Image 1 (tube, rainbow over the protein chains, first blue to last red):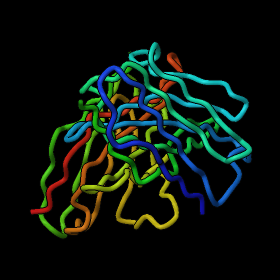
Image 2: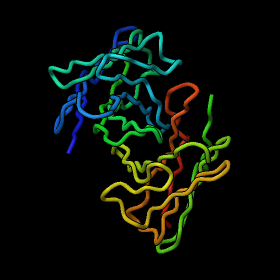
Image 3: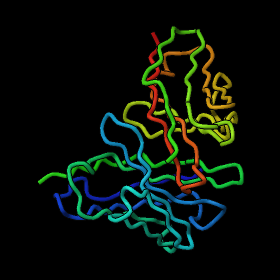
Image 4: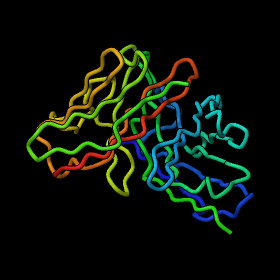
Length: 122
Length: 108
């Protein structure tokens, strides 16, 4: 059973960089046809996809966040990470990491972390 | 960009059938996936590829997709089904996922 766990600071100051890591257990991050993704959810709102990475290092980002987002992978640690620069209060949200199941029929998020609340405030 | 439209809320009595729709242009040509999210928890996939149920999801959950509307059907609704439900597709033109705005299911 694959498990994902987010970690990182719960409070970030405005204009600084938000950094989170997702640790994957129960399987290798390099096995199978999967992408690894970050998704966020402001309180009381819907889900917003941030971006994804393949273990080759290939990335795709949400165009609305692309200029501020970097997703990277460390296969030796079975982890992938998110950096979001120049944060504002609008970036306050629960951040989820998730595995993306890839097939010719479409992609979906089959495993999710429990989520971590990140608050942007001085 | 591709847009998915869901009703903000659906209400149904216990034991009845709840239907949650997800509208999108020619959505029938795409694979639709449905997630259940209970308060304070991460989303869980309840239907993938329009109508497949992942292991552990009750048979009461089913899905269909045709034309411009996909539908999540929950039969014999229980109090424990009360949650937010999101539909999702992968937009091949932009190569990224699209979520619907979510539907809050209230069990009366």
